[in-house]
Amino acid sequence: SQQGEEDPQALSIQEGENATMNCSYKTSINNLQWYRQNSGRGLVHLILIRSNEREKHSGRLRVTLDTSKKSSSLLITASRAADTASYFCATALNYGGATNKLIFGTGTLLAVQP
Amino acid sequence: GAGVSQSPRYKVTKRGQDVALRCDPISGHVSLYWYRQALGQGPEFLTYFNYEAQQDKSGLPNDRFSAERPEGSISTLTIQRTEQRDSAMYRCASSLAKSANSPLHFGNGTRLTVT
Image (cartoon, chains in turn orange, green):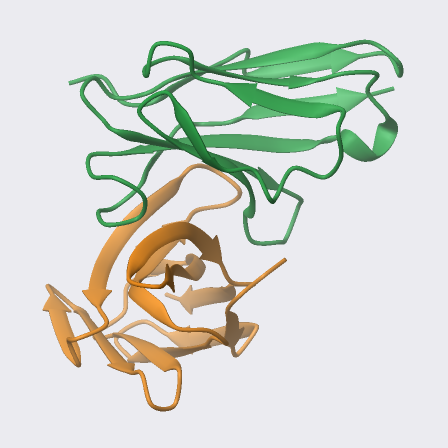
């Protein structure tokens, strides 16, 4: 079963604009990770944020985490056509302090128009 | 270095046959995950290992599915008496740290088609 749900399901923007995707989850987590997948190919890790962190940056990516609201957002700034892909959040579930399995959400399909 | 390698890339089998899908993780990676992904969906968790120990198999759909990682390296996902509903992309990933404490590195997957 899916733990996270991404919002929106699909997003279309122009090159140069910013893209924001949101992820909500249900249970306590140890960390949250974002992955990218191009056209059904392999998944590529983008960024990992731990439950005690609130914000993290990596190049044009900014991730926030609000554990009180059980939500995260991924911001891609100055988007490029090459950013066109599906983006998934994945939550590392926390059972009594022990990190467990990594559960993926439903994904956001981002299309960046040149 | 080499990434996660899965074989075969494509497998077509007849309903009722058994199949074995292989995953060769990145050398030295502790944890290994199996996922199943339908078109347009996110990866669905099946099972994972830390070293040779299967930590969680709660995602395996039924008892026709099993997985092993006997020496803490290569893993095999076996599906017995395949059914058409088993058709999907099966993805393997490995990670340096135990459980999900570090990023997962995914292989290119095995596309299984049951006819």
